Image (cartoon, rainbow, N blue to C red; front, side, top):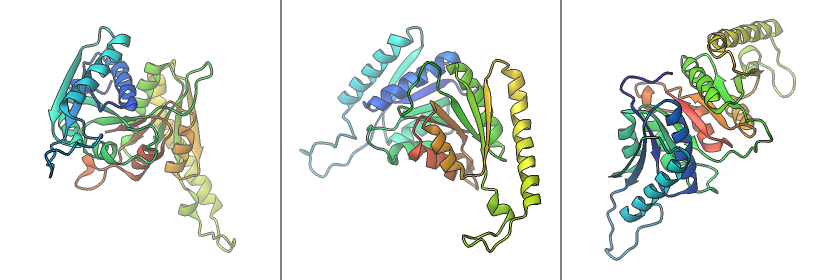
Length: 293
Protein backbone atom coordinates (compact mmCIF):
# COMPACT_ATOMS: atom_id res chain seq x y z
CA UNK A 1 0.00 0.00 0.00
CA UNK A 2 1.12 3.51 -0.77
CA UNK A 3 -1.36 5.33 1.45
CA UNK A 4 0.09 8.40 3.12
CA UNK A 5 -0.68 9.01 6.76
CA UNK A 6 -2.89 12.01 6.05
CA UNK A 7 -4.79 10.38 3.20
CA UNK A 8 -7.88 9.07 4.90
CA UNK A 9 -10.69 8.60 2.37
CA UNK A 10 -11.64 7.70 -1.16
CA UNK A 11 -13.72 10.47 -2.74
CA UNK A 12 -16.17 9.89 -5.58
CA UNK A 13 -17.66 12.81 -7.49
CA UNK A 14 -21.43 12.49 -7.94
CA UNK A 15 -23.41 14.37 -10.58
CA UNK A 16 -26.41 12.13 -11.27
CA UNK A 17 -24.95 10.50 -14.39
CA UNK A 18 -24.61 6.78 -15.03
CA UNK A 19 -20.83 7.12 -15.22
CA UNK A 20 -20.83 8.76 -11.78
CA UNK A 21 -22.60 5.66 -10.44
CA UNK A 22 -19.98 3.48 -12.10
CA UNK A 23 -17.24 5.66 -10.61
CA UNK A 24 -18.84 5.36 -7.15
CA UNK A 25 -18.96 1.56 -7.39
CA UNK A 26 -15.32 1.43 -8.51
CA UNK A 27 -14.36 3.78 -5.68
CA UNK A 28 -16.25 1.63 -3.18
CA UNK A 29 -14.33 -1.47 -4.26
CA UNK A 30 -11.05 0.38 -3.90
CA UNK A 31 -12.04 1.78 -0.49
CA UNK A 32 -13.08 -1.66 0.74
CA UNK A 33 -9.82 -3.18 -0.45
CA UNK A 34 -7.80 -0.54 1.42
CA UNK A 35 -10.00 -0.37 4.54
CA UNK A 36 -10.83 3.28 3.91
CA UNK A 37 -14.12 5.18 4.18
CA UNK A 38 -15.86 6.46 1.05
CA UNK A 39 -17.07 10.03 0.58
CA UNK A 40 -19.71 10.70 -2.09
CA UNK A 41 -19.35 14.36 -2.99
CA UNK A 42 -21.71 16.55 -5.02
CA UNK A 43 -20.66 20.10 -5.91
CA UNK A 44 -23.24 22.85 -6.45
CA UNK A 45 -21.69 25.64 -8.56
CA UNK A 46 -22.50 29.21 -7.58
CA UNK A 47 -24.46 30.71 -10.42
CA UNK A 48 -25.09 34.33 -11.24
CA UNK A 49 -28.32 34.31 -13.24
CA UNK A 50 -29.26 37.42 -15.22
CA UNK A 51 -32.94 36.50 -15.08
CA UNK A 52 -34.45 35.25 -11.85
CA UNK A 53 -37.00 33.16 -13.75
CA UNK A 54 -34.41 31.39 -15.87
CA UNK A 55 -33.95 27.70 -15.26
CA UNK A 56 -30.38 26.51 -14.67
CA UNK A 57 -28.96 24.18 -17.35
CA UNK A 58 -28.91 20.45 -16.73
CA UNK A 59 -25.18 20.32 -15.98
CA UNK A 60 -25.71 22.57 -12.92
CA UNK A 61 -28.38 20.72 -10.89
CA UNK A 62 -30.21 22.36 -8.00
CA UNK A 63 -29.43 21.12 -4.51
CA UNK A 64 -32.57 18.94 -4.47
CA UNK A 65 -31.30 17.15 -7.54
CA UNK A 66 -27.91 16.85 -5.85
CA UNK A 67 -29.50 15.28 -2.77
CA UNK A 68 -31.33 12.82 -5.01
CA UNK A 69 -28.14 11.96 -6.91
CA UNK A 70 -26.27 11.39 -3.65
CA UNK A 71 -29.07 9.22 -2.26
CA UNK A 72 -29.16 7.13 -5.45
CA UNK A 73 -25.40 6.66 -5.40
CA UNK A 74 -25.36 5.75 -1.72
CA UNK A 75 -28.13 3.18 -2.18
CA UNK A 76 -26.32 1.61 -5.13
CA UNK A 77 -23.02 1.40 -3.26
CA UNK A 78 -24.58 0.01 -0.07
CA UNK A 79 -26.28 -2.73 -2.07
CA UNK A 80 -22.86 -4.14 -3.00
CA UNK A 81 -20.78 -2.95 -0.03
CA UNK A 82 -23.12 -2.98 2.99
CA UNK A 83 -20.34 -2.71 5.57
CA UNK A 84 -18.48 0.17 3.95
CA UNK A 85 -18.37 3.47 5.88
CA UNK A 86 -20.00 6.00 3.54
CA UNK A 87 -20.33 9.75 3.97
CA UNK A 88 -22.30 12.00 1.63
CA UNK A 89 -21.64 15.70 1.19
CA UNK A 90 -23.08 18.50 -0.95
CA UNK A 91 -20.87 21.57 -1.11
CA UNK A 92 -21.25 24.90 -2.85
CA UNK A 93 -18.53 25.75 -5.31
CA UNK A 94 -17.04 24.86 -8.67
CA UNK A 95 -16.78 21.12 -9.27
CA UNK A 96 -13.00 21.06 -9.82
CA UNK A 97 -12.42 23.31 -6.80
CA UNK A 98 -14.61 21.20 -4.52
CA UNK A 99 -12.88 17.98 -5.49
CA UNK A 100 -9.46 19.61 -5.32
CA UNK A 101 -10.20 20.71 -1.76
CA UNK A 102 -11.45 17.22 -0.86
CA UNK A 103 -8.35 15.63 -2.41
CA UNK A 104 -6.07 17.24 0.15
CA UNK A 105 -7.12 14.61 2.70
CA UNK A 106 -7.95 11.82 0.23
CA UNK A 107 -6.21 8.67 -0.87
CA UNK A 108 -7.92 8.78 -4.27
CA UNK A 109 -10.50 10.83 -6.19
CA UNK A 110 -12.75 8.98 -8.64
CA UNK A 111 -14.95 10.76 -11.19
CA UNK A 112 -17.07 9.66 -14.14
CA UNK A 113 -16.81 11.03 -17.65
CA UNK A 114 -20.36 12.33 -17.73
CA UNK A 115 -22.64 11.66 -20.67
CA UNK A 116 -22.04 8.31 -22.33
CA UNK A 117 -21.77 9.91 -25.78
CA UNK A 118 -19.17 12.48 -24.65
CA UNK A 119 -16.24 10.70 -26.24
CA UNK A 120 -13.70 13.55 -26.38
CA UNK A 121 -13.81 14.36 -22.71
CA UNK A 122 -12.89 17.84 -21.55
CA UNK A 123 -14.48 20.08 -18.98
CA UNK A 124 -14.71 18.98 -15.39
CA UNK A 125 -12.73 15.71 -15.55
CA UNK A 126 -9.66 17.32 -17.09
CA UNK A 127 -9.77 20.22 -14.65
CA UNK A 128 -10.21 17.82 -11.74
CA UNK A 129 -7.28 15.67 -12.86
CA UNK A 130 -5.12 18.78 -13.18
CA UNK A 131 -5.95 20.11 -9.73
CA UNK A 132 -6.21 17.13 -7.39
CA UNK A 133 -3.52 16.68 -4.74
CA UNK A 134 -3.78 12.89 -4.88
CA UNK A 135 -4.19 10.26 -7.59
CA UNK A 136 -7.35 10.35 -9.66
CA UNK A 137 -9.39 7.81 -11.60
CA UNK A 138 -11.47 8.97 -14.54
CA UNK A 139 -14.05 6.23 -14.97
CA UNK A 140 -15.87 5.22 -18.13
CA UNK A 141 -17.44 1.91 -19.06
CA UNK A 142 -14.80 -0.28 -20.76
CA UNK A 143 -15.62 -1.10 -24.36
CA UNK A 144 -14.11 -4.57 -23.97
CA UNK A 145 -16.28 -7.37 -22.65
CA UNK A 146 -15.18 -10.19 -20.37
CA UNK A 147 -15.30 -13.63 -21.94
CA UNK A 148 -14.67 -15.80 -18.88
CA UNK A 149 -11.35 -14.29 -17.80
CA UNK A 150 -10.77 -10.87 -16.20
CA UNK A 151 -9.69 -8.14 -18.56
CA UNK A 152 -6.10 -6.99 -17.98
CA UNK A 153 -4.86 -3.92 -16.15
CA UNK A 154 -2.42 -1.96 -18.33
CA UNK A 155 0.36 0.17 -16.85
CA UNK A 156 2.58 2.44 -18.90
CA UNK A 157 6.13 3.07 -17.68
CA UNK A 158 9.05 5.18 -18.87
CA UNK A 159 12.22 6.70 -17.46
CA UNK A 160 10.49 8.96 -14.94
CA UNK A 161 10.27 8.48 -11.19
CA UNK A 162 6.50 8.34 -11.58
CA UNK A 163 6.85 4.89 -13.16
CA UNK A 164 7.69 3.27 -9.82
CA UNK A 165 4.58 4.76 -8.22
CA UNK A 166 2.46 3.75 -11.21
CA UNK A 167 3.77 0.19 -11.02
CA UNK A 168 3.04 0.00 -7.30
CA UNK A 169 -0.57 1.07 -7.87
CA UNK A 170 -0.98 -1.19 -10.89
CA UNK A 171 0.25 -4.32 -9.11
CA UNK A 172 -1.99 -3.53 -6.14
CA UNK A 173 -5.08 -2.90 -8.27
CA UNK A 174 -4.49 -5.95 -10.47
CA UNK A 175 -4.47 -8.00 -7.27
CA UNK A 176 -7.64 -6.25 -6.08
CA UNK A 177 -9.39 -7.05 -9.37
CA UNK A 178 -7.86 -10.55 -9.70
CA UNK A 179 -6.69 -9.45 -13.13
CA UNK A 180 -3.57 -10.05 -15.20
CA UNK A 181 -1.18 -7.11 -15.45
CA UNK A 182 0.39 -5.87 -18.67
CA UNK A 183 3.45 -3.65 -18.20
CA UNK A 184 4.11 -1.52 -21.26
CA UNK A 185 7.11 0.55 -22.27
CA UNK A 186 6.55 2.55 -25.45
CA UNK A 187 9.21 4.77 -26.87
CA UNK A 188 9.67 6.21 -30.38
CA UNK A 189 13.23 4.99 -30.68
CA UNK A 190 13.78 5.76 -34.36
CA UNK A 191 13.66 9.50 -33.79
CA UNK A 192 16.52 9.23 -31.32
CA UNK A 193 18.91 7.22 -33.48
CA UNK A 194 18.20 8.03 -37.10
CA UNK A 195 17.52 10.79 -39.57
CA UNK A 196 15.62 8.73 -42.09
CA UNK A 197 12.85 10.33 -44.14
CA UNK A 198 10.00 9.03 -46.23
CA UNK A 199 12.26 8.88 -49.27
CA UNK A 200 14.70 6.55 -47.55
CA UNK A 201 17.62 8.98 -47.99
CA UNK A 202 18.51 9.18 -44.31
CA UNK A 203 20.45 6.72 -42.19
CA UNK A 204 19.79 4.57 -39.16
CA UNK A 205 22.41 3.79 -36.55
CA UNK A 206 21.44 0.15 -36.01
CA UNK A 207 24.10 -0.50 -33.38
CA UNK A 208 22.88 2.44 -31.32
CA UNK A 209 19.29 1.28 -31.81
CA UNK A 210 20.14 -2.19 -30.49
CA UNK A 211 21.98 -0.69 -27.52
CA UNK A 212 19.12 1.62 -26.61
CA UNK A 213 16.54 -1.16 -26.93
CA UNK A 214 18.64 -3.43 -24.74
CA UNK A 215 19.02 -0.74 -22.09
CA UNK A 216 15.30 0.04 -22.13
CA UNK A 217 14.35 -3.60 -21.77
CA UNK A 218 16.78 -3.98 -18.86
CA UNK A 219 15.33 -0.86 -17.24
CA UNK A 220 11.88 -2.34 -17.62
CA UNK A 221 12.98 -5.64 -16.05
CA UNK A 222 14.67 -3.82 -13.16
CA UNK A 223 11.52 -1.79 -12.42
CA UNK A 224 9.20 -4.79 -12.50
CA UNK A 225 11.39 -7.28 -10.60
CA UNK A 226 10.81 -6.08 -6.99
CA UNK A 227 7.04 -5.94 -7.50
CA UNK A 228 6.98 -9.36 -9.12
CA UNK A 229 8.76 -10.73 -6.05
CA UNK A 230 6.27 -9.02 -3.71
CA UNK A 231 3.18 -10.08 -5.69
CA UNK A 232 4.16 -13.66 -6.43
CA UNK A 233 0.71 -14.62 -7.70
CA UNK A 234 0.63 -11.79 -10.22
CA UNK A 235 0.36 -12.76 -13.87
CA UNK A 236 2.58 -10.23 -15.63
CA UNK A 237 3.08 -9.65 -19.34
CA UNK A 238 5.66 -7.19 -20.64
CA UNK A 239 5.27 -5.28 -23.88
CA UNK A 240 8.04 -3.20 -25.43
CA UNK A 241 7.02 -1.26 -28.53
CA UNK A 242 8.40 1.45 -30.77
CA UNK A 243 5.25 3.59 -30.92
CA UNK A 244 3.86 6.79 -29.49
CA UNK A 245 2.92 6.05 -25.85
CA UNK A 246 -0.38 7.92 -26.15
CA UNK A 247 -1.43 5.97 -29.24
CA UNK A 248 -0.11 2.64 -28.01
CA UNK A 249 -1.82 2.84 -24.63
CA UNK A 250 -5.06 4.04 -26.20
CA UNK A 251 -5.00 1.05 -28.55
CA UNK A 252 -4.42 -1.34 -25.63
CA UNK A 253 -7.21 0.28 -23.62
CA UNK A 254 -9.75 -1.23 -26.02
CA UNK A 255 -9.04 -4.65 -24.53
CA UNK A 256 -8.46 -3.60 -20.91
CA UNK A 257 -10.44 -2.80 -17.77
CA UNK A 258 -8.03 -0.09 -16.55
CA UNK A 259 -5.00 1.88 -17.73
CA UNK A 260 -2.56 3.19 -15.10
CA UNK A 261 -0.13 6.03 -15.86
CA UNK A 262 1.92 8.58 -13.96
CA UNK A 263 0.91 12.23 -14.04
CA UNK A 264 4.37 13.32 -15.28
CA UNK A 265 4.05 16.91 -14.07
CA UNK A 266 6.79 19.37 -14.94
CA UNK A 267 7.91 22.82 -13.83
CA UNK A 268 6.83 24.95 -10.90
CA UNK A 269 3.32 23.48 -10.98
CA UNK A 270 4.49 19.89 -11.29
CA UNK A 271 1.99 18.57 -8.78
CA UNK A 272 -1.00 19.99 -10.64
CA UNK A 273 -0.09 19.69 -14.33
CA UNK A 274 -0.77 16.58 -16.36
CA UNK A 275 1.66 15.24 -18.91
CA UNK A 276 0.63 14.81 -22.53
CA UNK A 277 0.20 11.02 -22.29
CA UNK A 278 -2.04 11.03 -19.22
CA UNK A 279 -4.11 13.91 -20.58
CA UNK A 280 -4.49 12.18 -23.95
CA UNK A 281 -5.68 9.01 -22.24
CA UNK A 282 -8.26 10.88 -20.17
CA UNK A 283 -9.66 12.16 -23.45
CA UNK A 284 -9.46 9.04 -25.58
CA UNK A 285 -8.97 5.81 -23.60
CA UNK A 286 -11.67 3.14 -23.99
CA UNK A 287 -11.65 2.18 -20.29
CA UNK A 288 -11.07 3.89 -16.93
CA UNK A 289 -7.77 5.74 -16.48
CA UNK A 290 -5.85 5.85 -13.18
CA UNK A 291 -3.50 8.85 -13.04
CA UNK A 292 -0.94 8.32 -10.26
CA UNK A 293 0.61 11.11 -8.24
